[in-house]
Length: 391
Image (cartoon, rainbow, N blue to C red; front, side):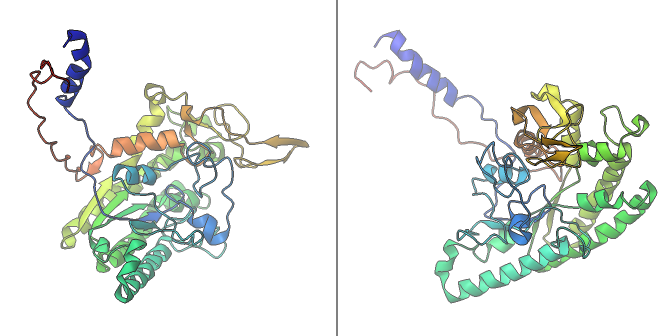
């Protein structure tokens, strides 16, 4: 056999012996998610008919998907990492959705504290927990009648062995700044977290044992917040983010982190992981060009251009009359170049970066365990390749 014909086989054998780089060990049979628009996969749209139309979804789904994003969210990438299908929204019943590997209760605009009568989203965290409790009871009832339902709903042990994910609280802090001083917002945080703790304890009593809790991102770096509270340059940090809102987010995260540690030591069998989303997202915004982005703060889908490309009077995808002229808030040509999607939410490209970072386990407390080692490769041998007979 000629040496030239051996080269592809030699390359394959070498590749088999290279070390495999894998994310941290992150495998669960099902996921039950709670939160706001950072992880909503269609609940707000289905629940109150809130329009989440084009160009949302254009990058990955090629159509609106109930997500406030051009494509996938962090929760979607987490599901990908476990080879699980994307979570269906609890309230979206059209199309006979499957809940075999979990359910998503997150709703855009949700708060931890109970929603007011005037709130756009009535599905606060306590409401979502109540929905989960009903969901679990109904699932167990169906399985008790006919095990064939297991094809479309979680098996009973999935409620014990599954992962419970949380990304909520941003809207509580965000909304508080419209009526409170920074000191008053800071004083309000323990009240917010007391409500969150009550919900977590209810879930624990329902059998939840694996909790994955995201801290708040850098709220002060959202174009909407900068446009509203950052008109005075003295209010901004070196990255152009509003100091007060980021300080509040950091304070919230510090107290949330402490709460996670307390609950982890207090409740038997509880595995609770705190994830520092703030550090991941701020690093992305501060060093966006190093990660292949061209814009760290400006919205991809917005109106007005400039450093923010955001105008509160016109939402992403809208066309309306402003100052006597018809204008549109259109998406940018390439969303992969932008960190921010619409002034409030992140692009799929940014969400992909965030998920890749959190799956390293370096931003988690406790850190994620490393993946199991791969099986050893077969011994490297060219004897078969050098044999005269065809392989």
